[in-house]
Image 1 (cartoon, rainbow, N blue to C red):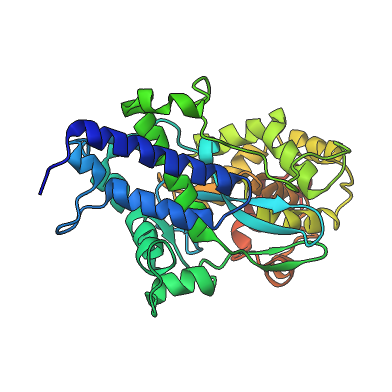
Image 2 (cartoon, rainbow, N blue to C red):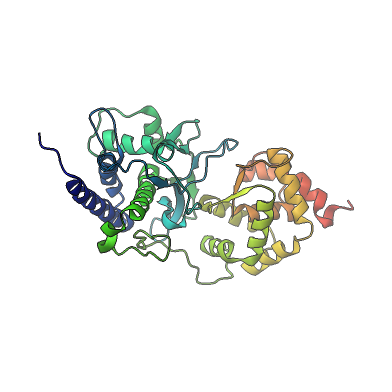
Length: 375
């Protein structure tokens, strides 16, 4: 047997970086099955077991720190959670929502951790309480689900996650609704982003030909996908895309974001599957434009701060603890309830909008909204 030299291992690494980057580019163009081939490369780079030795181990680089772009799972959240992905809306014929990797838009930017912590970190929790790490996802895809091998049987937890929507997330738009597929593929794409960004820090000379944008957090090939639309033709329209734009750009929303953060609550990424619910709630009020909505949020200043404080104490207990989180769109939901508690009664919220334990929000609404204080 002839041992390979360090120079040969470096050449292998350059090849693997090329394989991984080209597959990521194809995924970003819309060929999402390329994520399965990414797991081949991730396994070659990272996986050590028995006689299988990873390329980074051959190079004595397994001790480098890896970019972790995820928040921790919230143990108090009984819903399904996915920390590597967000949701995107596909507009056109057959409009739908889909899982997408955060890439450079991840909520955590520059956190780096040892490999074992990164590899084994809990990144998905489904509605049944099953937990998945990066290791679980990569090895399930590569060993059993089409990466290098297709097994006759799948782990039941992985099968439920990828085939039976055990994450419990669905979408409902005007003309379509359904489960959202591809959580494992989008997660693998985000893991690939983290690995490429990590390797770019350690081996920048191997990335020259890939023309990474080094002025923006090492942006890794975020190629716009066809038919994905995030703009709105009329900025004052109460549509999903306009609401998303408003929530991302409004200074009034930013004010309430900072108030919520000051209460110890983390702000998660946009919950696209909930915005249609907010639109249905808006239809029941006299709010007809983004401008009207902004006035509502502006006029809630002065009492809304106390309302939020008590609402979160009702939900999480006195003194909101670290790890509690909400989505940005929740600001619309909370202040619609706070300003229209006669419309959004406990019964309506529970039966029509699936709002669990609504009294935790409606009671402080009537307590602090000036319109109800003298009643």
